Image (cartoon, rainbow, N blue to C red):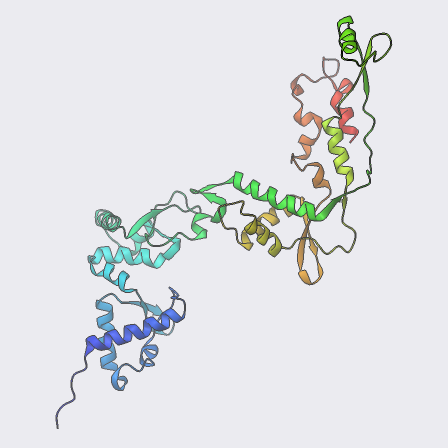
Length: 369
């Protein structure tokens, strides 16, 4: 009887790899997905489920860098590499491959150079030579991490650093972008405020008649008015001028005219609505996700600018607090709200001096709010 023909390991290798790759694609090419012996057997590629043949095929895939061996809780498993990644590995020395593999395992979080040295136990000169070779082939690149700004990190050139490493949209070049954060907060607050208050059509606090200031007119001014055909404005050469409304009075009038929505109002914006508003506004180049917007809403809640409201089936909504209207354009501490906190002549202020509490002009304005 003729002996059975030896299995074609090369053909079986391709069939196993293609079968595993199809399963990997169906799972979104999850970088943490691994295959065990039973998974490969279930592909129905190994003739008679021969264990010896299976081991030869797996070893060939490992040698050609298509498979990477990992330790799973229930034994040994293998993770796939793409054909392009396998080609990169095949051109490396043993030391370079070890270094590259550790950086590859770190994925988008990046690998710290000190961790690589400890795990590989390579001499510094060999380690630096491997890093230099990998960088020259554009296989790895240096990376900055906001979590560890002083560490030297490396990442695969084909990957983008994770939000954990970059800090998300609130960091630019590893630095906290306070200007961008404040801009987004202002946009969100203005939107919430418009949905929380309405401008009363009936002036709650009418504007007081502007104070008339009587100014002595010269002969030339009286003649000029007469020449313009206005006639005499007043007897005795007195001109009346209206003093403009002060900024403080205008701010107080605006504050008094803004009224909150009635009890039971259901139109306060939710997180989803605010996220959609920022996305459709096309104000910012960065794309802000719901969790990014949530971070800023939490900050505004802590600063007592907005408040959470349980809004029926909509869940949590947000409304602006009335006291935040007064400080809409100037958010200061409690100390800076007192005139003394922003007084330009604070150092000269003392009782009996040129400036003192008893003759301070700012206190009267402040107390009249």
